[in-house]
Amino acid sequence: MGWWRYYKPARPREVKGGLKTRRRRGEIGETWWAKRFLEILDSFGWSNRLARGRNYARRGQVIECNIGSGHITARVQGTRRRPYLIEIAVKTLSAAQWRRVIKAMASQAKFTAKLLAGEMPDDIELLFNKAKVPLFPSSGRDFTAECSCPDWANPCKHIAAVYYIVGEAFDRDPFLIFHLRGKERKELLADLNKIRGVKRLAEKKPEPKKQSIEPLVREPSSFWGGDKRIECGFSFEEPPLNASLLHRLGVPKFWMGTEKDFYRTMERVYSSISKEALRIAYRSDET
Image (cartoon, rainbow, N blue to C red; front, side, top):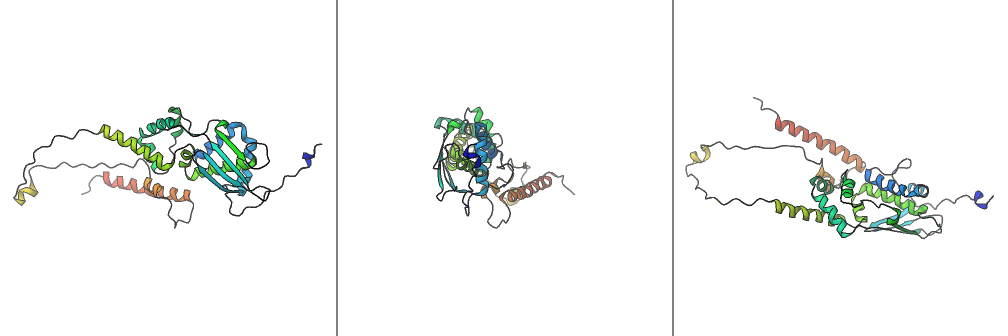
């Protein structure tokens, strides 16, 4: 028998205030985009390596994790006194690829509305695919990861732990996916608004020719009475995105529950108010 059969892996040093996954058991990631990111990593044949890092992520061994344009840096506490340093480079999209994607987004108002509200549209990956641009890295070659630990495997458990923390960061802020692929939130929204603004100008109808305005009648009785009935109509409909302003403002500091509970509760309230407003607006006049 080899000596490794008797080897007992050492427990990592405890970290106070480390970054932990929300769930101690079961699947990590709550939103479809976070789950999709982790599923793609698993599809690269990394399942065994990722499993080793899952416990590290649950225990809170990741001290810090920073997501930037095309890179992730982190510190993970292992068994040694000094934390291990992790650097992950992620392939970003080219300028031409971003132009295609943003043009496709701008052509559909619902994408812009949801993104402005801080939400990821359900079918946005399909939009990326139609533009022939991958939303998520499509192969292990799109990642270049290094860890200062002595483990030869890549990803090692420290790198794998960081991937899980990144996945949960995507849960909280879907714009981090775009940032990692090379487009920061402000820049993305500015580009979207710019294209949509140009489109609106192109679609703008020419102003009608100015007509001569008749002077007002000086007699008050004739002015307020008039001989024609003014036709005035109103249109009421539910907003395309429920509680969009609320999502843009974020969770108030006085809220004691979770972020998910806040939005779920307030979305129900907003929906009830919208339905009641429509009922009042369209009910027949009672005499």
